Length: 326
Image (spheres, rainbow, N blue to C red):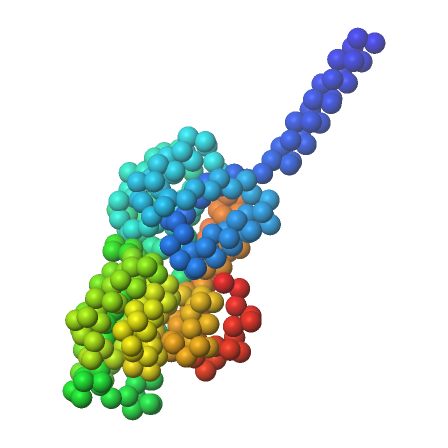
């Protein structure tokens, strides 16, 4: 009888162990840069929803726009021995040391949304996200086509269309990519001599800073500005407030084109206050966790995996708005 009880206990214990292994969740540490915009909130919500769908134990950290907080979070994930680390790099550089720590711990790293620059590409497995360089090219392509088709003339009576640019966070790949994409497309255009950039300054991807910087642009160049290119919609929405406060008409006096494709800019287009937005799709969670699963199974994945993105204009806004998910 005693032997039977012992065997039964061993059997039950083994069964419980097998059950525990079978039901064990994958643990993933994820560091988000913050909540600077509608876009980022949508991105965060999508990541959390996709983690739940994939039965992932998600250890989420909000870096509040500080790289040191992200590095601290990644170091914590390493100490917790998570299965995989994901993060959105707030800036492109300064990651080598912490990623080497992850590599030594044999924890794969998957990047989301923004690019990074490291001395050894093997420090991370892949990047999920968007193509900021192409987004910048799309902005210029739309703008040049719009100016040409509508025969837009400079407000100051000169021979050049004058632009101001609200840049994203300094050092971020999104800001750098959009700037380079736009600049390269402009330089390659047969109409390049038609355009003049009056001023370009960071608005740090936030609505408040976008409003403040646009106010200063208007004080310096009130009757010269023909176009505002904002690296994201939130800065454009902030800028619209400054344009209206100055007695000017957004989308009429000043053409407004931005990047992201959030609901706020669609509403602005419906209201006649913005002209176009180039989509930067924040719904990257599903692709992220699908890729993470492949990595953890030992399958090979492409170094860069991009989500689909479109271009939307004011005449499409009312029709498209109800179907927008962010």
